[in-house]
Amino acid sequence: MERDCKAWIRHSKSALNEGGNKADELPDLVEEADQYLWGGVNSDLTHEVASLIPALRKADEFMEKLWDALEGRPTLEEAEAILETDPLPIESPEDFETLNKSIKSAKEWLAKYKYAYDKDAEPMDSKALDVIVAEATRIPITIDEAKDLKERLSSIKKVADAVRTCLLYTSD
Image 1 (cartoon, one colour):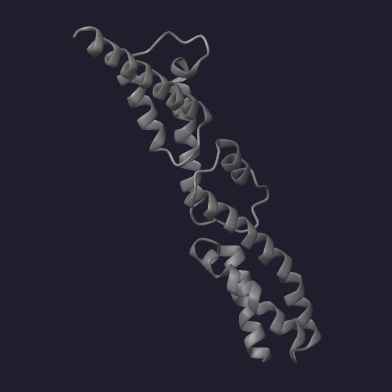
Image 2: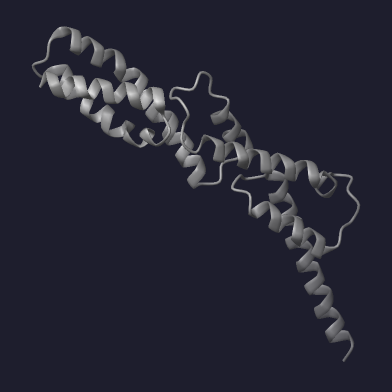
């Protein structure tokens, strides 16, 4: 049992210090910890296991947030909050850079199309708005300004359809 406990300790330290793809092992390491707290190992090992558990849980929770963000479409603020975690509970978290790139893309979109979603914006062609909204949907971050543009575009299309319908009936 002590040999297994020492291996668990090495494995846990490795997951926390190396991160990367070893982050996938965090849930199992957290789950396995209890057996070494209660089962026949010397007190030094029990103390070391107990001291690793909070760090493993914190790293596991952080990675869950990161993975959830990458699987879903977090808001820009939610994604930034994950990246601003300091200190990081795990070294070189896998996919951290992916989220960072998504945030950068969202910020670039906001800067590039500020003229389109500004309250005092000039009227725009619906095809131009279509392109801008389509570009935002390719970014895996929810951009509130893009949602507003999409709603504006939907309204424009409804009005255009209504005008088209009126013109068809009045031309007969």
